Image 1 (cartoon, helix red, strand yellow):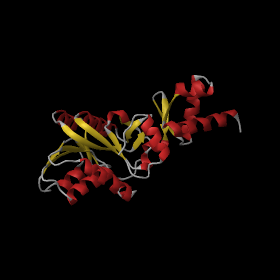
Image 2: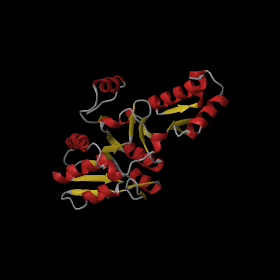
Image 3: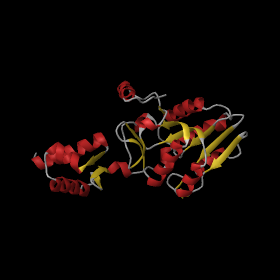
Length: 253
């Protein structure tokens, strides 16, 4: 194996570990010039191993979004387990936030199964709003904004402006990736901004993610894991992952 091939395989391995890499990282790790590092990234992009970004690259897989209806079929038992944990965190009279995503949809359905006497739900997800509309004792607040058909989420300046005027007690946040280094990530920049706004308008916030998302990252940064009150995941979380997250100061439910 040539040094060039070995170096490029090393770059891909580092990307799989981190989810993203900077040109400076390649220069430091492999002892090459900036021009060589950039040529390596260009070649690997042509081979569809990564996507170049300003000053670096991310994995090709971080921008490959699975359709919502397919996500609903993935890990349903784990999502039900997470939804049950989230439901137990809600108290009668709470004002809660639900972002889009399949796991938050499972939380909405759990609320429908056993409604609270009084509950206010703030959401930017059209499908979750439809699910909760008409539930006895539930006040529903939709953010408004531009709909993204892949996720049914409303986002953008209109959604953010609505959230700026609301105080939420507990937000339950879906994410496409959860990583100790890269934090919470998703596929769309506007959704990432709106989700971040919902976290910041909340007294408590909980990231919902099944174990298959742990250690993975998507294209756009939402917020760090330390910005949320706790990570709510399923029993598939390994002992090694539990130690790593606990050592980093992350609470998990």
